[in-house]
Every structure is written in structure tokens, then in C-alpha cells.
Image (cartoon, rainbow, N blue to C red; front, side, top):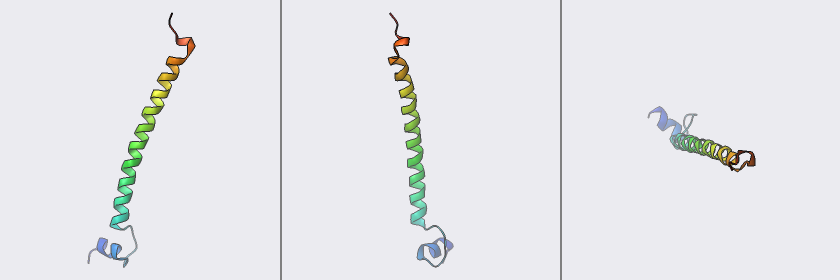
Length: 58
């Protein structure tokens, strides 16, 4: 029996295959969310500048 199989069976301590897959999925989701936040921050900065009356052109 291999090491991963032993961990999955509970015969050995460590991260199970299921836990490892979940961690990988969560890391990918976290990366996407961080990218979304960066885009939203940039958009907020842009639109705040557009709405600033000091930046209005006659």
C-alpha cells in the first residue's frame, strides 16, 4: 500500500487526497477572488475620479 493510500485509509498521518483536492480548489478560487478584488478596486478608483467635480471639464 502506498503512502497516499495509507493516509487516505487513516493508517498514516497527513493530508488525504480529498483534503488535498479541496485545498487546491480553494487556492484557485482564492486567486480568482483576489483578481476580482483588484479589478473592482481599480474600477472604484477610476469612477471616483470621474465623479470628482474637480475633474469636470466645461
